[in-house]
Image (cartoon, rainbow, N blue to C red; front, side, top):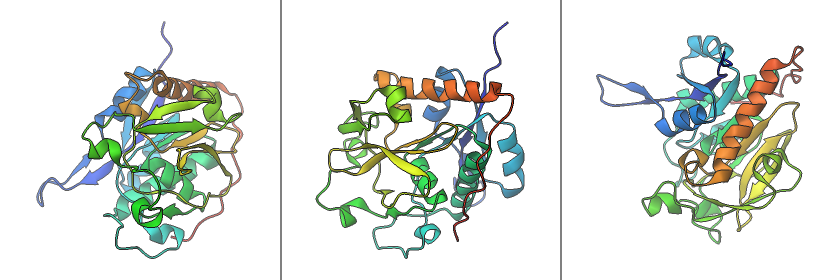
Length: 259
């Protein structure tokens, strides 16, 4: 008999289809990549009273990409180049990230998800890379060129990190769809990868479990790039290992950041 697939919480968001029929949304690629790696993806909608009940059903957490994180969550005022923010989504995903860290639940955080992870740990973000790091790469080039899975720069992985163990301590081709990124690291986080211009492309938490954030979008690349498929496989392997442990070892409660 086959083992039951571990359930992975996939964060979703609210989307205004019309004034009369708003809806929840989630990009299909996250669900497909999770399923391809052996997980059973469960969409988690940002409803406050349901959030904990849905989260408690799951074995791992996938924080997805999307819009900008409100700089109020890391003590800054918005600059003119800041994009739209979603208070409901910010609250839900920051809460999910903190719960997962406290519960020692394996987490893969992608693009905005990596930024949410950093802010959840007390870190800050560049609100707009072109404005604040004008000499750097175009970190939105894949979208600008209209091919979301297109590799446009290198992800240089830091040796002896969890990310290196998952995909190799080398340079990997990466796509890029962001204008925000990690600035000051949050508590307990370390850099696991950078782009050629030095911008942080991956982070991980020094926890007992597997908590990795990556700025590019491996869910759009796993069909053609082995490292992206290996990342999802490593995440699911850790989820299975964590689920089989008899005595979980949760982290102490995180320092709460004023929001």
